[in-house]
Image 1 (spheres, helix red, strand yellow):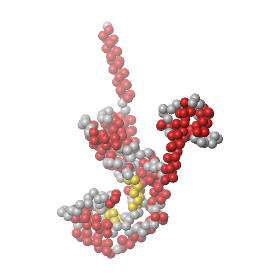
Image 2: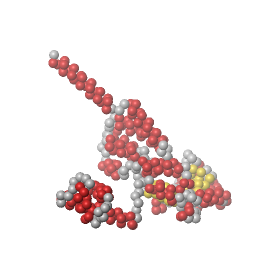
Image 3: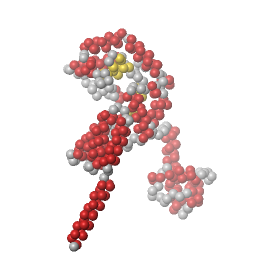
Image 4: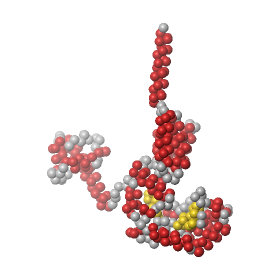
Length: 356
């Protein structure tokens, strides 16, 4: 009779384990809800992010539900997917696809890939992401008016260019020499090649072999001649005074044709606010000197606090002795000392608990 009882206990244990597993495993409804929420977050970002990366959300949820791979690596990259693309240090979409592909095929991750993921900076905070997302939506539509106070300079130059017979003749000559329609994007825009920081140009080598090479060379020179970033059908897209966030900083661009007045043309308050969303702290020679002095005083206070403990001083006597050694007025609020010591709290772990 022992065997049947043991079988019954085994079946009961198996049922409990199955119930525990079901309780821990996310339900289909909860997975769908999380997926919908993430797709909604992606859809709020600029530059058609939902269109480009929506499938990654579904792949991630499938991989997570199957409990495959390395969740810490996958989770870190997945969180980066919802950061505005302006702040990406690298193509996160492509990197996440590479990781998912490797995990699905159970391929051993190369140490270089692990190093790359490990080197990713901390996820930008919500304030930085919100401000950057708003900026991206404005940039996507060419709207820099909030950052400039001299829109009239752009408007006047644009109107003059549209009437310029020399400009019209140049554009007509290009259309007569090339099939320009093949170079338009879905918005019917032809863009010149970009010039990066410090005037670096990746595609700089002169090539004249193919019709595409010849068109690109001609169009780049045409755009520089007339201060354009491209053409929308027959409309010149004149360069603007702009400020753009990049992963490395904030770039202010003043077109070559612009008669620049630093005081009147730029909305410095708006640009400064945009730049500070990264959490930049105040800087300056005097401020740096003050910080250095405070750090030295905090270090000295920390040593004195330890010495006071060694002398057997406690409570108010300990506080008063440290203040006296620091040459502080004895009427100084004890909270000032507390704040000074807490500023070095990371170094106080070897001291006794601070009780003032």
